[in-house]
Length: 286
Image (cartoon, rainbow, N blue to C red):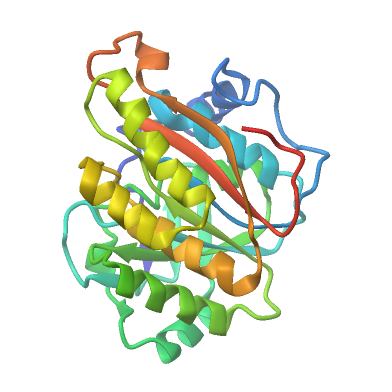
């Protein structure tokens, strides 16, 4: 058995389990968050979500909008978590060799059967732990899941290669392998980085409009033309294409904010968005 130990505990989120739970609780109750604690009583038919991945102090309240919604689900889901590889270490697109991931709140199992099927179906996805050991974009999603759900598995997919063709290939691989399985896809991404709040909101809106329209080429075009430093555009494109393949055509912006809303410093902020992909109207409004 091979376990990946937490790489960013004590940095992106607290390493003490009790402090970690209190921090997550505060994210739900934040004025930027949903303002209430899970579980939600409002079940929705969602394929997946785009969720931010910065330090909990900054992006946790925005992420909490997604996890509040997920908290209405039953146990025993597998969460396919796609995240950008910020360090560029290891294979360009990779699932981990590890069969367990550990956080301060305990150990989560990898869905080995789904991993096997995805590897068999794809010529682009490798098995490589080195692509995951240091990366935070997937890891920071796991404690939120542990807070709201007792029993679940994960399948992390790290992406340093995020061109549109690669994203489409990954989406089609997932499409061929999840039929009949209880899965939720998490595409981990922050939005525009380290610009004024005015600039971030303008650029983020261009990207969000493409995402909610399921316009994949429009997303890549917006990123290129507007110099949008959205780090997880590949994972987002995977979820967008998968949504079209599976007929989840209702895309709702759950929350859009930025680090300036927390720190009060609006001169240099990072944008965060939580976005849901649904079979039908969720009842949520932007």
